[in-house]
Length: 398
Image (cartoon, rainbow, N blue to C red; front, side, top):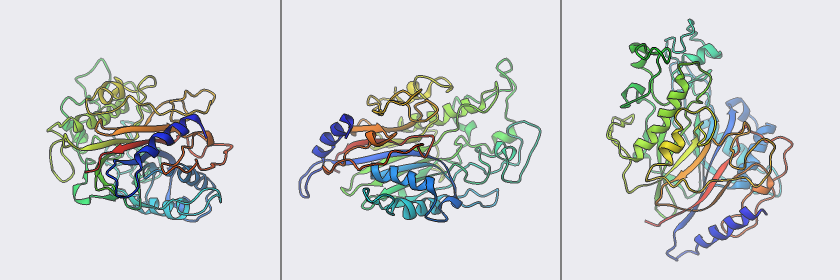
């Protein structure tokens, strides 16, 4: 066991109490970009990469985990498809099955809502002179509300362990909120020296949402009865564009939406028409691949450091790290391309007990109940281009 894992064990074990004692709840929360998992991958129980992904999750054993880049079965190009079935089959056939006799399966319920990715706009959003409404190409993806080569491509799903439920009547999603309706939105122009000429026409802005996938506020109810709001998203990467920086600007404003939401901004309107931000007394965790690093990379105006870390409500002091020395990677990097882009950021009302970035066996944390860290096999190649990020957090009982 690594020293980081032992420290996390000591802290987390102190928060887990026998039944009947009035102690806060310790919860392990994680985010993991799976790298483009599709329905055909979960059609059997024998996909080699999915087996390795499942082993990583079984070894980490989070109570709550957000999966990024998991897609639904393809639907009509105008439909906002949901990846719930794909996530459920991945949970049942892989995470809930024995992949290694040394590691026990974990059983989860899957939750998801629709994604904007691959929902075709019918307009030339990337201004390349072509509109291809047939799914399956980069031209199709470039003119979709969020980049995706078919509806729901690169979607996301939440997995919750038994005893953890979702307050469905309190879910808020923001997938239909238009980018132009954010006050002070940094919409792109055709070039830096022509700010008067917008990249997007009024017709485009009338349909273009801010969220490239979706923004979810999923209130998770713990076995103790406490509720933690899971603020889930996967903003577009701030690259793959041109000098207009349309993706960099959108990435910034997608991250800004969470900063404004937890700050109580009145302009934020969810998909049911309810306006206003998060209750100032609510516990929350911001989860997901945010595609922005607070110290390097191509993000515009550093929204992680300047918006989230500066929020009075976000606890960003604890930085998850890997103890494994990896060439060309810093301990805090969460992706194989050398950036910290995946986050588990709790509210200051929650106490951080430990956490890390899991790149291999040495990073596997001990279990909160005192059991030793599961023996994760050493992979020749990690099964995703991202590594899972996890925190153990202490949630006050209601």
